[in-house]
Length: 106
Picture: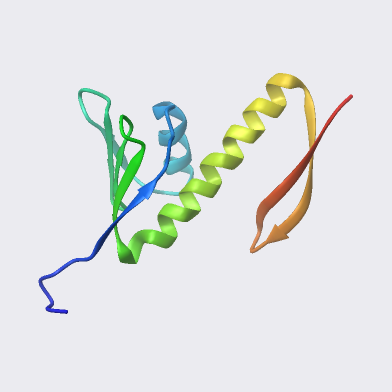
């Protein structure tokens, strides 16, 4: 592949809460900019299109986008659990990331 070519990948990611996205990106140390129409979030790792639910990313940054997806999902689970007064217990843990949860309501 010539050095001037960049391979990009589109990833499906249906995140609708822009504020939550920005919070997770900030926690990961990634600067983000929201377009005026609030349909796109531009970051160093890729462009998130809120309307289509897709992320346009270079192949080299795919791991970071996947890490963001996991962190965003964890944050959503935490918010819902807190709202519904559930207790989350981790079942599976790989590379310091929770992969599965059991929710109990007391």
